[in-house]
Image (cartoon, rainbow, N blue to C red):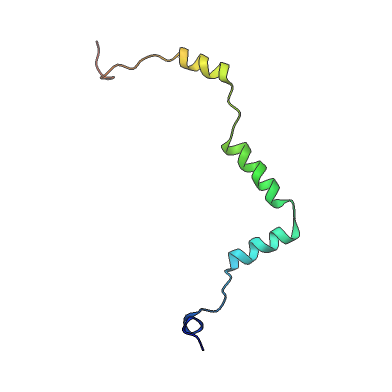
Amino acid sequence: MPATDFFQRPHYTSDATKLLDELHRRDPTLAQRQQEGRARLWEPVIDRALQAEFEAARVPQRAYVYGSD
């Protein structure tokens, strides 16, 4: 028996991994829908004109905001 076989652990699959594998088996479009959902949340379309208006309307903040001068 080689030394590598002696230290090798038995294959383990967690319950969470089994659940995700089962979900992907039941619904083959799940991965694509997940990517679309992530794109909606994390990659929004930025309106450059509106962003420029926000930047133009920005008021500079004073160094000490609690002062009365």
